[in-house]
Length: 335
Ligand code: TYM
Image (cartoon, rainbow, N blue to C red; front, side, top):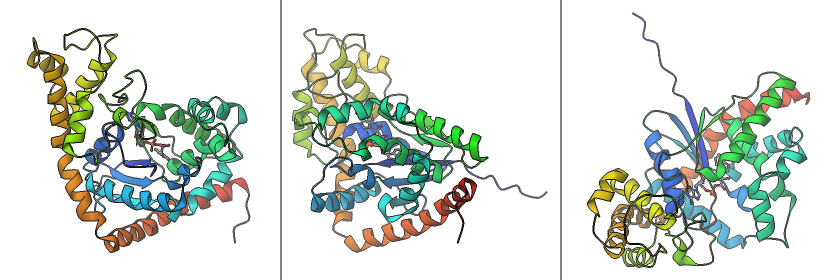
C-alpha cells in the first residue's frame, strides 16, 4: 500500500529581546515551545523589531538579541528540528506588516490593552509603532500559515486581532491566510509578580525581586522566593483571594509535575517559610542546566551567528511565498 506522508501542523511564536527571559516567559511560552517540537513543524523567533516600539540603547539591544537567541537554544529549542531566526533578518516581516496595516482599523488597534498600558508607561514616546505593533505581530504569524500560536494569556487579545485581520483580508482578496488558533498552557499562562501577585511577572519591572530571571543564580532565586509576598494566613491551599500562594502553587506544580491536590497534601500543616523554600529550590534545580548550557553557547559566537544565518534563509524562503501571494492579490505589479 502506498504510504501517505502526514504533513505536520505548523507552530509559530516569538519573544522580545528586551532582557533575560523571566520565569513567566519560560512557563507561559518556552516550555510549551520545547515540548511541541516533537509533534509539530515549529518556527520560533526573536522579535527584535517589536522591541523598537520602546526606546532601546542600540548596543544593549544587539547584545540582548544574541543572548536571547542563545537562551532559546539553551532552553531546548533545537535548530535541527525547528526553524529559529531573528525577525529583522527576514525582511518579509516588515513588508507584510505594511500591507496588513492597510486592512487594520484604527478603532480595533486603539482597544488593545497592551497599547493602553504601554502608552501610560511611556507617555513621552507614544510612537506609531506602539500603535501598530499588533499588525506586525499578525504578519509574523500569517506569513508562516501557522495553525497554532503558543503564547501566555497576555497575548490573547493580539491573537484575536490576528484572526479578525486574516478573515477580513481573506474576505476582500481571496484565500491567502490560514486563520490561526492561540495555544495556552493549562498552568502558567499568567505567572504573577512575586512582589505584587495581582500583576503579571514582567522583565521590565523596576523591582528585580518581583521576577525570576532564568539566569539568576541559585541563591538569588531562593532569596527572591523567600521574600515573595503572600497573605497573613497559614494554609497552603489554592483558593480565591490567595493570589500569592496560588501563584507559588502554580509555579511549583509546573516545575515538579505535581498536581495542586498533591501539593496541598505535601505541605499540609507546614508553614509558608517551608513552602517558599521548596518552590525556590525546585525552580533553581530546573533552571540550572539552562544556565550551564547558556554559558557554553554564548561563548561560541560563531556558532550562534551561523545558526542565525541558516534560520534567516529558511524563514525567508517560507515567508516569501505568502508575501508574494498577498502582494499579487492586493494588486501590486509583480516584477
Ligand atoms: P513577550 O516577549 O512579551 O513574551 C514572550 C512570551 O512570554 C509570555 N509571557 C508570560 N506568560 C505567562 N506569565 C507571564 N508573566 C508572562 N510574561 C510573558 C507571553 O505571553 C509570550 O508568549 N508580542 C509578543 C512577541 C511576538 C509574538 C509574535 C508572539 C511578536 N510576534 C508572533 C507570538 C507570535 C511579546 O511581546 O511577547
